[in-house]
Length: 221
Image (cartoon, rainbow, N blue to C red; front, side, top):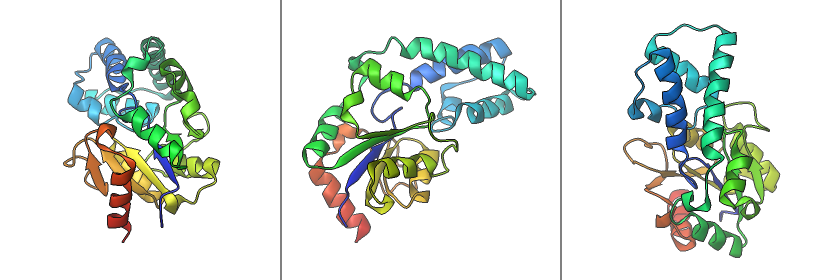
């Protein structure tokens, strides 16, 4: 069974927005008196904004009611949007455009599967909105990864069966979401962290169509 579609997480896979998330969360945690490190930030990859806030409050042993949480999350997002509104095409990660264009030329459909509600803005700022056949993001899905909803929605929008999709993900929760969706998953990052991914590469600059076909034959055989 050959892959008919590739679904990409956005942050950390196609563009590097992780540092902007970190800067915005660090700004908030400094105000709240919470010691927050880049290592702590790794725990937030692929996690929704409110779930990320819960992790941060747990790190700082800070209690907050729902109204306070909403205000904190809104404040963080305001700063994050300020950062990403200045993004340029130079921030597209190496190899991403070449691989996506190769897939499209081969008739393989491509989609975004991201928890971020800011996905449309990021795609527009870096100039790649038109490259994707579908976008499933936090604006149309409710359940956060590792729930498979975002990837299943992407497959639905593409009109492709989940088992014919391959997901590219950089987060533990995202890898699990892809597997929960019944999809093959290629991790972007460290094999020591993305242990459940069927294969791990450091970035899309290491991927091409021939390699994808070889991997899918090995994994699905």
